[in-house]
Image 1 (cartoon, rainbow, N blue to C red):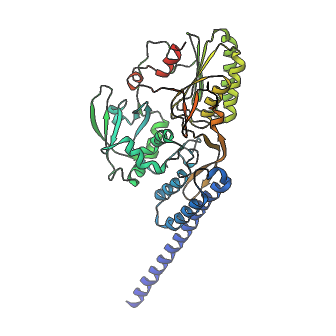
Image 2 (tube, one colour; image 1 turned 45 degrees about the vertical axis):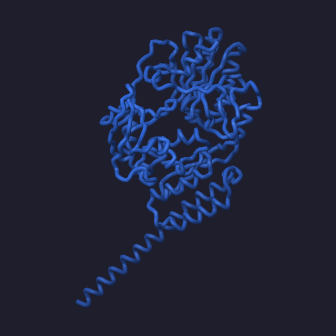
Image 3 (tube, helix red, strand yellow; image 1 turned 90 degrees about the vertical axis):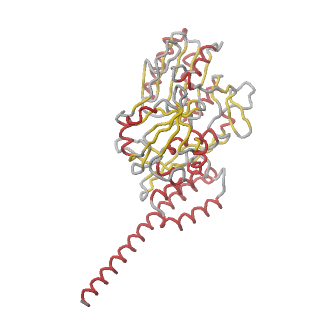
Length: 440
């Protein structure tokens, strides 16, 4: 009996020692990740601490190290993202690789849970653009509440998690966080898995719908395999609606020559894929159609940026290719226009005298960019951080009274403020493009 008790005690001691050893090892690697975050942010302190100070940052890092061992991975990821968001730079954040076959990244990990809907701002209305097939009845409706909480209040609740530079940026950036179960639960928007949303459909009818979360990797798989139920916009009889059919499509670049002498160019991002072919093809079209183009439209709505050099080249291509001072240029932007795509809008405004149409701009007068990334091994994610400051007010030519960009307080805005109307959108009418067509 005593021998058995001794064996039990020895086994217990071994288990305790192994557990303590595991905790010590885990603590070591977690601290390594936190140190990487600290090191990378301090790499360019003049950039990182533009909107805060190193003393506050150091205090927060110290507190995080103390708390880390008591946090699970999701809580730790949230705490680190809150730290990064406190810097007030929309390119400084955590990202998660979601597909081994490409470089796709999300603001949540595959192991989290998401509500299987995709959201998009249409003016002041939050559209449910797509959903898993079991929720197809809500696609095309406007989301107004989550668990009896108005959408603006939900955004306010989760705002500490979002990397943004102004209110326009917060409004758009919050969308990807807003559908993640772990984030909503952490900020006490929900207390059980199932949520109840309030929607207003295209006919104005208000109703509620219950939605359950699914594993994030399942939702990502539905996205990748194009198996989400998507909103369909009816084909408009108005021939001035160009988006949907491009003569040439090169990944993130598309152009359409419209019969009413308008060259419409849609750019989703300024990345490598397809750019050179796009530039070559656009040059050919400009030579062929040069005398037949009266207006050029650069549609940068929901364009997430990329290489600044590409922004310069596109402006140069248009400037050289058209060569006609009588051509009118227009740039369409919204709150989903980020980074180098904003730079492209500003360059077109300055060098092509383009009329920029949109509203509040997501970049601050002094913004940050030239993004680098580092791996956090224990947390299995990336930290993206900025290494350079840009004077967006100067690039936007705000001192020029004829500029389309103005500085209002600490916010950059377009002189021409336009919002897409939901009722027009669902009928296939693009209010921004209609303005271009009718502008004389």
